[in-house]
Length: 146
Image 1 (tube, rainbow, N blue to C red):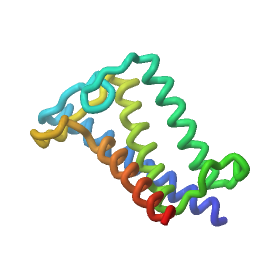
Image 2: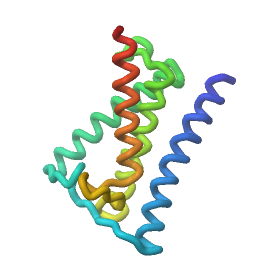
Image 3: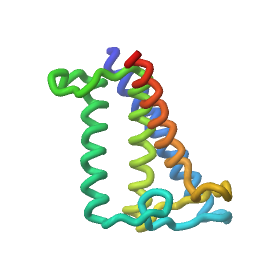
Image 4: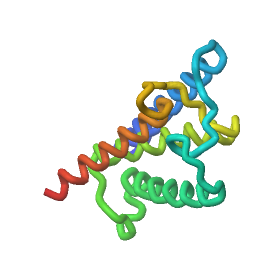
């Protein structure tokens, strides 16, 4: 029962994050407002497309393995590290943001960026989720090392 509840919570958080980002991008595109269609990778950088997809698949596979291991304890032998709840949340944030940006790239051929702070490259909510997830992972990892 605990696994079903945990899976439902994980799915709900991911769906909420992904939906929030996709709805915000849809609204900015269709209701008006500033946005750019970012064909680059991150912060406007371009990378050879094949290399991008190879890197993406490797990172995605690693994170999925860790999430499945956390949820179902299937790969205990092969787990690289044990995840705390906060580290798990960090992975969910990263994957939700990455999947939302990949949806844009597959559907539109670019990622919709619309948050412009003037002193930083334009970004979107999915980018915020990715950065927050990475910060959460780093902070909880350093805390575990002590």
